[in-house]
Length: 498
Image (cartoon, rainbow, N blue to C red):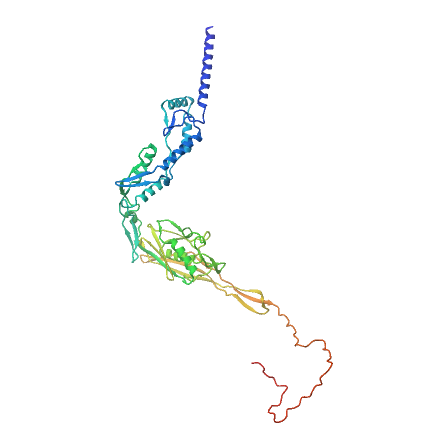
């Protein structure tokens, strides 16, 4: 009897616990798409609100925040800071997730405890803000221009005698932008009544110090090269200027590889290039960017004379007039490139200029290890052109005309010679092959047509009808003596032209 009572009590307890558990689960599960009691934001009770209503309240707060001007103050100066210009916004999506997630994480017991505490003590939903800090700092500098003294970055310049002179940097005084940013966030998050930020001045260090510039190792001229062009070819000169300007001021760290095509970019009308003569299929024709290869060729020779490492170079299919044979470098965007590496332990600096009828390149670097450099080329094989006879239906049979003058091709080797301590070091450069241009002779195949028979006027195959009144011929009478006329010779050929 006693054991039966114990079993009944145990079953009753289990059943009661199950009922309580189910009731608690139902309580915790009820209204999962609504904010639990006790949650507030800026004094507004969010209890029972769904996501859409939460978003509305947060967006209303954002509009009010953006419409309230913030004052920046320094001593007796005041500036109004426009919050919309720094992309300020409330992350309403994330904050709605926070509000709806309260009391719904962890075990059933922990959820119940969290809901109980929030209902009893209340809970202020933290503000989530998004601010473009970079725009904030730029706007601070823009508004307070003239306040303080900017730091001066160190730099360098090229002197008239081709040396590098360092321009020292210097400290400055500027607005403490980091502190101003923290004060703005503090005002917005803590909802201070007074929208004022007091600015402070702090010492500003240059981004590039004198020591940093000196460590680049730039001291003087390593190499220079110039080529000439026809200034009357306006479009070609324009292209030369555009391409050369892209390379002017190039600063290359030690060991860095440089691609001509990557620096200069595509040669297109959108990039500002014009039509001028280019080599296509062994012929000079009009094409976009004509003249850019003169820029790459001039740079190539400057790199050689500066004793830098050449990684990739391709010659034209035909020799060009502005540089000795074997020393040209053609480029085609997306296909053929000129690449080199700063193989020194210091920075190198590239300068270009176009003046008069000359394109000039100069490369500066550490002259402590500069060695004399010379370039020599040699033709090792002459490639004779062929003569091609092409039939031409526009020429008469037996006639000939030269349609294309031939030109010889060449195999050329180039070498760079450097002298160190009086000892020559010879470096073999890439070989150049210039294809011969065939001589084309047009041969006529047009057959001569028989000349048509042209009858004199009045001559016909049929006899004219007889006249009704024929005129009898009259024998010519010799002139009377003494009339002053010479006798007529009917066989004499007379010239009737004038």
